[in-house]
Amino acid sequence: MNTHVPADFQTRVRHQLRRDALDAAFALMTEQGWSAVTMTAVAAAVGVSRQTLYKEFSSKDQIGQALLIREAERFIDGVAAHVAAHDDVASVIEAAVRYTLDQGATNPLLRTILSGDHGGDTLLPLVTTDSQPLIALAGQVLSQHITARAPGLDDEDITATADALVRLTVSHLLQPLDDTGTTVTRLTRLATRGLRLP
Image (cartoon, rainbow, N blue to C red; front, side, top):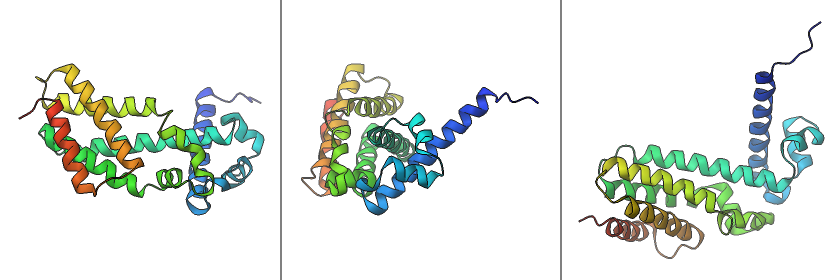
């Protein structure tokens, strides 16, 4: 009897376990708060042993980090889809900022982190002091959209403006100062000036 398990099957099983675990953690967090997300609770929700879960995630903090990265990737995909219908740079920037602020205000994971409810504040560094990888990725995506619509713009201006815009938008998510419309208008104006657009 052949007991060999193909490597691609093992990989698919691991990926499915990872997805299921993150889905379970997200559901627990949304319904009961971050303090309810324990290795035991996630393993039980998925239907595996804690030992099996530990093979994929070494700790609850690692689950939190993976959750945030997954949400950020989905967020960036959403921005890309949202700006696809816009042809000029200013409209792309305005649409990206508005989408980010609107979606960020209602995202359950971000709300839990920023409110600090039920231990959510332990994940705060992932969107503040340890957020550089996510900011870099968002800036790169925005730069690509700007370049595609205005290839004649200076590359350094695009990179610097996209990075600054992402950081400013995130800061408004963390500490809103104005209504969304005012913030969108101001950030769009700053970005277009940084790109030296009319």
